[in-house]
Each structure stands twice: as C-alpha cells, then as structure tokens.
Length: 172
Image (tube, rainbow, N blue to C red; front, side):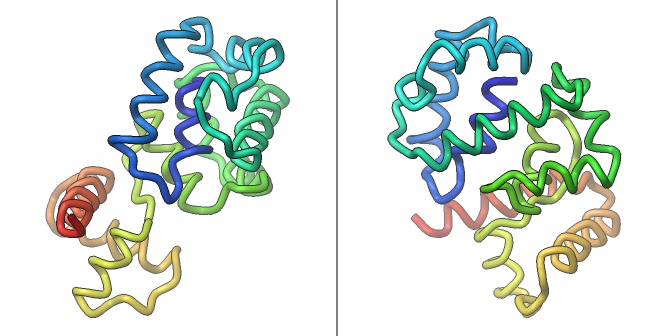
C-alpha cells in the first residue's frame, strides 16, 4: 500500500519508467512492512519519505501523508480494502478532497489496486485530440473511453493502458 500511495502521489508529470518506478521498487524492498496502510504510516512517522523516495518534492510528500491519514481514518488497510472502498462515490469524493488528488488520481489509484478504470492523462487527451474529440471535460472523455472499450469488447483499463503506451512511445 505504501507503493500505491507513493505512486499516486509522485507520478504526475514525471517519466514513470526511469524516475518513478525504480523509486517505488526500492521503497518496496526497503520497507516490506509498508504493504499495509498501517505499516506505511508507521514508516513515514519514523522516517523521512522524501529521503526514502529520493524525491525533493514537499507537496507530493504532503499528498502521500494526507492520503495515508484519510485511509487510516476510514479503516482502509489493504489493497482489497481500497478496491472495495472505491466502490462508493462518497469515498471517491473524500479522496478528491486531499490536496494534490484530482479525478485522474482517483481513477489511477483504482487501477493500482486492480480495478479496470480509465484515468485520463495527457497521453489519453492527446489521443482524443488526434481522433477529433479533444474538447471534452474529464468525465466526458473518460466516459467516451469506457464506451469505446465496451464497443471493442475489452476492459476499460486495458484500452487506457494501450492508448497510454502508444502515445507515450510516439512522443519519443
């Protein structure tokens, strides 16, 4: 869960494969007890998360701490707990109240815990612009991707990931 919280908190506008992923893998090796929210909370209470992640980003560290405290307060401790917790609209809204967490982050967290969702980011927006549907808001664009996935007979998260991979490689 520590890696899920850090992934959600630190990934935005960063090169995932070369910057974020190695730090998450290192964190998992260094803090194996952070597999639960309680274990992660104990670690960040005793150690500096910025040092552990090798990230000098105070706002992102603050977001990770705030997500952790929200989940603790709501009784969410495991990936399965979070997967189920995200079924409720009011829980998703509570997560959005955390500074640094927007609708994309909520959907992204869902994907991290095994839900198949569309988290609209710059790559998915660029793909939509290329397809002539770029003037949609977040919710409308997510719905368009979900409907496209249904029409194609695939999981929404699978379509999202395929588009993300295609667009992220196209920019290189």
